[in-house]
Image 1: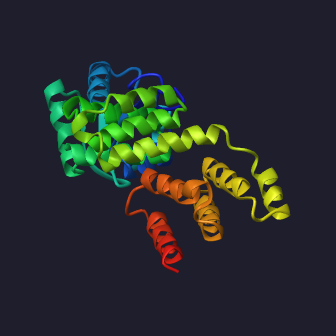
Image 2: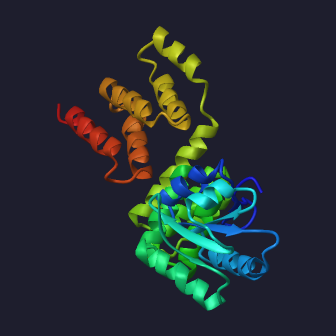
Image 3: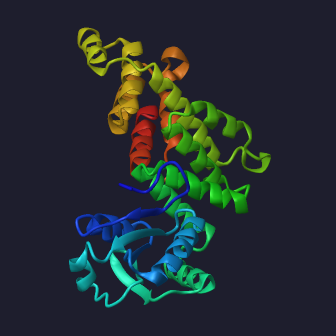
Length: 297
C-alpha cells in the first residue's frame, strides 16, 4: 500500500522511516495519527492489528493509523523507545501525546481512540466538520467525503456537512451527483448560506467546462479592451484555473467599465464567486469593499 486507500473507507497505511515525518508527524497536524509498531513474528500483533484498524476506520477519517514494521524501521522505533511490540503511539499537532504497548481488548482500544479524539475536541460534529473541511481543502476528497457522510448519518440536516459533501463531488467532477444531492437537500436547510455556497460552486464548475484558453482571451482584450464578453470569459477561465483573485480583478474592471452590460453580468458573477467562498474569506471582504466603492463612486 503506497497511501491511504482511495477506493474504500480505509484510513490505514504502511509507513517507514523515510515517510514517518510526512505520514505521522505532519499528518497529525490535521487529524490525530496512531503510529502502530508491529512485526510479522509477533503473535499479539495478529490480534491487535485487525481490531485497531477496524476501530480507526469506524472513526471515518477523524483519526488515522500508520503501520510500521519494527524490524525494517529500527531507527525510528529506537527514537520512540519501542521496547516490545505491539506498541502504539498517538500523535496530534506534530507531537506524541499518548500510547500503549501490548494487546488490548476492543473496548480498551475504543476508549483509547475516544480519549485521543476528546483531547483534540474531535468527538463532536463541529470538530469533525473542521477536519472534513481541512481534508477537502487539502484535496483528500475520499476521506473528506467519508467524514461528511458520517456526520450526515447522525445529523441529516447539518447544512455545513451537506454542503461539504456536495463540494467533494464537485471536486471529483461528478456534477451529476452534486446536482442530485442539491435536489435532495432537506427543506429546513435548503436556503442556508452553506447550501447556497455549494450551489454557487456547482454553477462555477459548470461554467469552467466551457472556459476558453486564457492566452487567446488576453489577446482579444489587448486588441479591444472594451470587449466585455472576452473579459467575462477571461474571469471564468481564470477562476477555473484557480486564479480566484485575478478573476475577481477582471470582474471588478468589467463592472467599472460598464456595470449594466448584459443585465449586470459582472456583478452577478462576482456574487456567485462570493457565495462559493466563506463569508469571512479575506478575498471576499476585500472584493466587497472595492465593489461598494465602485457602486457609490
